Image (cartoon, rainbow, N blue to C red; front, side, top):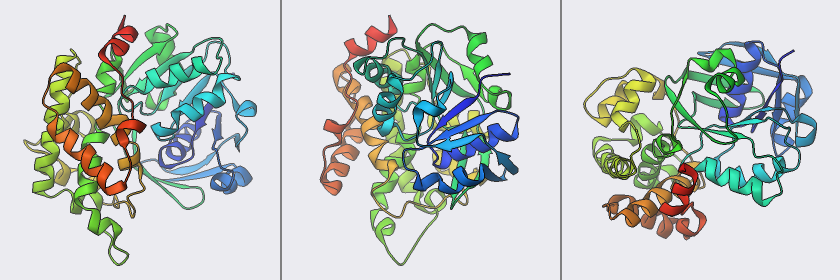
Length: 350
């Protein structure tokens, strides 16, 4: 019997993945830090999937006890700001030969995860697979329901840590998503291919008033990303691409990414978004205390800015958004963020 799958995190992505995998014959275990968030699933062992994936999925177990659930195939779906916590939980219980998928790694997530495992006494570093993006366009609804709008295609992934062959890696992936991923040689391609920081940070800050309104709600992509907002998003994307080019990374621009993942071919970001029917029903955050800032700035814009400044590349629009967020949120995302030097990154490339 094939090894079970452990999915870490029962948010939007985790619930969609658990339901999808279980509906396609995988033995699924689900871990979440808080019991309250999974109490209905723990009781019924059931996840209801709607949308692009439909069915009543049965999983083996849902629990807050990592040691009772651990498997060799592990899919981490929590926001990347929680990767250090997850690595600490796993460090003492990992099985030999484990493969860990970070969905997604955001920028340099695999480096952070491996370093945290080492700090916490992990005796055998596993293969850590960093994906460029979340496979599912999805939203968790209350209790045990997941609405899956779409599954992306050509999602890049790269491996760090224990050496792993391509065949071994793909064998660890459930068959239902194998054709959704492509293996790329370097984690630079996945880390600097992080699209979340481009699509999330600036638009949230430029719509702060509407997001904090208690009387109004709006659709994030269709209402929040106007032509002017998209024009600034393009500046962020161009600076990300300049850093990626200087590092020798093979990354798609945001416009190219829409074609790769959704099959949408347009000449500008605004048109790509308006043509993406899967974005039509995505609601905007109702607070600035949201991963679109608290994850995508420290684990996206900050590491790209850090590299850009060291390389002498213009990252002024990226810096502007970080400064803007720091001022609005009364925090310092640079202190909280992944500020890896060029020498540190190169040490993982060798």
